[in-house]
Length: 442
Ligand code: GLY
Ligand code: MN
Ligand code: MN
Image (tube, rainbow, N blue to C red; front, side, top):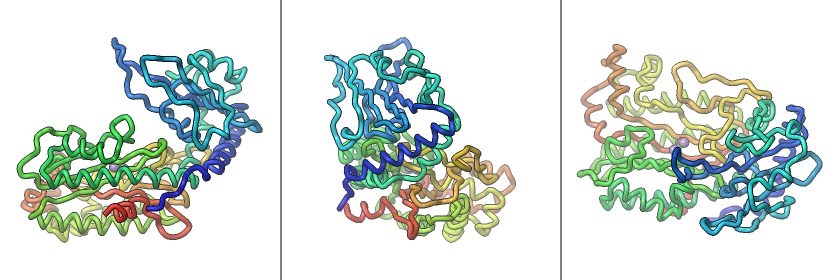
């Protein structure tokens, strides 16, 4: 399929970040924005490092995810500066010399030791908004993360540039390749671990690159929302398969979930089809001006309509929502902002001056409460699960009669269903970033 080339879009992306940074610095009363890429962390009493995770504030500017001890410096009116750490080191692979579509836009200073950055950073750390973790401190440059600066940048980051959207489209492609391979491995009787390996191999990414740990769940394991154990033995029979797995493109994430039934499990397949059809409608509801909280509540009603149709609940969707029964079957949020981070920042931000839009009562895991606006990319990930712990609470709360327990017993063998795509909010129709890639890789 035709994917947009991010290179020609980068200059406008950088312009947008410069404008945002200028405004953020003015609000915070600072002269410079200073963003360390981050440092390696070491395991306690050991010389092994944890997987390096780049500072998201850094990778929003640059498609660089593996250059620890580097620094971005923006001073209004000047070309952005990049202090690029490329050590002399024969033990490890070191970052390549700067190359790519971004290079021409920066003044780049290559350093060989982290301390050499000090001579290149602004003179007075007190005039700098320094965004990062405490561990990144170097000399007097201790991250201060000024709230007005963070509030402004995070709020604006919800509005993706054309460049970011291009990268997010790219991030779908290896993930869908992985999903196709994973489904084939499931149908061939593979274990969770083997399915995971098939995914990584087809996607061309492993845990160093994947945006989050793969959720590969067979049968009842699908009822564990973030199941990452990866069993080495295939269950017999394998009845169902839930996979929540994404991929990265230059630091931008995809986050995709599909659920499959083994051949012969027709009723569960029918339930998957019903959730899939409902999910498509929810994706189509991603429109400018629509409140994401309402999308979440509407999803509860749609999912409870399905459970009622399949005889799992005995009450109306509205009654299930009011009593909390629906939250036992759909116990997470409808989704979240996504971008440089899988769970992207500022899902609750009331404005670029700060403030918080609270979740509706009774929905403690919703990750996004803002009204949708063009440029936002959100996930839409409805699910229904058969989770004993939550179903016990339904009984304890006196709502046992709202549920047909024989039907629960029938479906609990499958664990649950979740379907997840990324959707771009535009001025018009929703733009599903994920589905066309599945269609093209059919
Ligand atoms: N993969 C984590 C999530 O869907 O939010
Ligand atoms: Mn997911
Ligand atoms: Mn998600």
